[in-house]
Structures are given as structure tokens and as C-alpha cells.
Image (cartoon, rainbow, N blue to C red; front, top):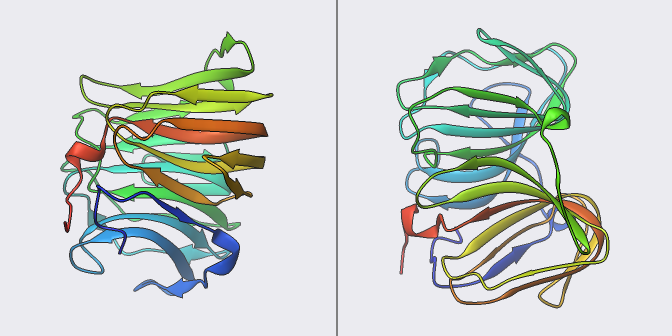
Length: 213
């Protein structure tokens, strides 16, 4: 699903149905999947109902989580909305949510070796003309940040970009996007954003993703 990294794609959340997962009371909307349905490289919007629990499992190739609402929990702690988590290769947990939560999740897409838990509200914002940026993660290939657009944002996009709209309404490369819509634009397709909203942005990582082309 959306496995060709040379193709740009936009997925509108409101047009997608929730699909059940192997864990009772946990459902998801997949934006991207390459490989087996329950063990492949995947990007999803995930919903835990109140009291939902997932059996203990490992995370080969790492896990990236942005807590959108509620409180997500595991043996490492309780993670409220606004938490950014990175779990490395070899990490295992049995996650749950007592009150319910929603997450943006990327599996098999974190190359680092360290566990990271960030309170996004405590990350300093870098101010620019028309937007603000909070840096979440960076290495020699990719950069992950939150972009708070007040009027506009643009970048050249040499290595491909992926985004997930957290708040507001934006025009992204001519496409109208609402909350929880997802996009990916292939390398060398410039990114042009206008409007007012907050979105997750990952740049440069497409070369690390499996591709079906």
C-alpha cells in the first residue's frame, strides 16, 4: 500500500475506515504498508479504546510514536498527548491505554539505538517568517520536526518528505488537507504549504524505506 517511493500520495483520513488489529479494542488506519500485514514497514493512525491492551511484542527496526490524544502507556511509563517516542531495535513492551488514546505510529522506520521520550511542549521553537519549527529527531539522513504554519512554509525537498496534519487546515502542494490527513512527496518535488496549521514533517527518510517500484 503506497509502497512506491517514487510516487507522491495524499491520504484523507476522513475517507478511510478504521480496521481491526490483532489486539481487541485497538484499530488503525494504514497510510503506507510494505511487507506482511502485521510485521511489515507501516505508517498508521492508531486508536486504543479505553482499557485496550496489546500483547507483549518486540520492535525490529524500531518504532516511532506521536501521541495525539489521551494517554498511551507501557512498562516504560505513561505518555500523554504531545509526547514523541522513539523505541529502538530490540525494544519490547506490552502497551495499553486506561482512558483510550490515538497515536501516529511508524514501524520499522527508526534507525537509532536510543530510547527517546520528548514532551513536545518543552521543545524550543525556532521562529521563521511565516512558520515555527520544533526539532524532534535528526541524524545524517533524516530530520523530524513539527512545523507550525502561520501563513506559509516551503522547502526544496531533495530527499523526499512525509507529513501528517495535526491541527488546522492547510493547502499542501495544491491539495486541501484537514486534521489527520497524511502526505508523502517524492524527492525533488518542492513542498509548498499555505494556511494555518500544525503538521509533523519527516525529511530525507524515503531512501531508508522499502519500495515496491
